[in-house]
Length: 163
Image (cartoon, rainbow, N blue to C red):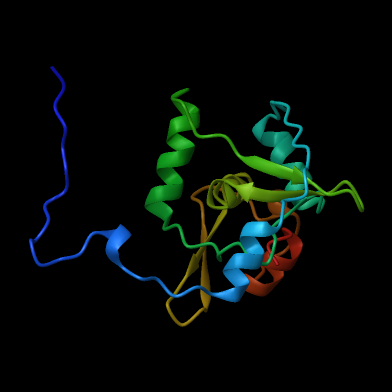
């Protein structure tokens, strides 16, 4: 014996089949148009964190304009790094390889990748609501190891392909 469940219905409310729905010309055209087939090829690429950061800093991995700005707070970025250090599972980063120049565009994992790059540089970027940023230098981190003299937000963003 099966159990049939129906949504609650007011006696005075007509069923969808009883409602006369206006037709929209563009929707009718959409219904008659077939989608162009395309092929998706995916393969795993188990890059080390060092390789990901190098590709990011060299501009091989790019953030498309559609991606939101870096919004993670230091606590969240710190938890991500802690997950790596404790060998806990971390969601993958999904990249799309362009046909024009074979560069890699971030599809998913933008916040994670930027957090990893910040960790490797020894500097964390904190954005305020007013879209200004402040830098946090990790304790005992040598500025020379980060690639030069003392710098501010703009220099850091330019030097680390965060633009």
